[in-house]
Length: 69
Image 1 (tube, rainbow, N blue to C red):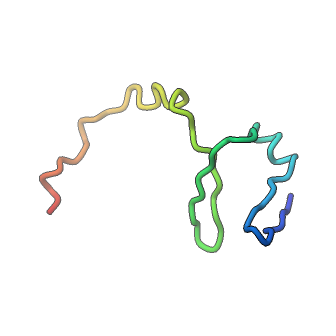
Image 2 (tube, rainbow, N blue to C red; image 1 turned 90 degrees about the horizontal axis):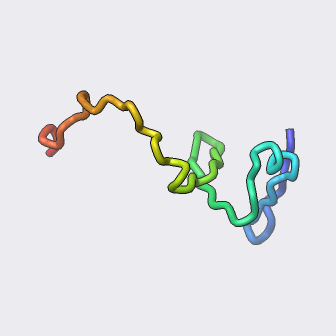
């Protein structure tokens, strides 16, 4: 397990082994999702990566806004 230290400027360097395994690159954007006492860090997908993500999705069971106040 890799570790990192939070700097006085509240910055963390992601260990090289983790960056390489995840194929993360400099300049890439990330989202931080609070999970209990920790945080889930995930890369923000590029728009092109989302193309076709909902292909074949069944929209027949989607709620209508009339059930909200």
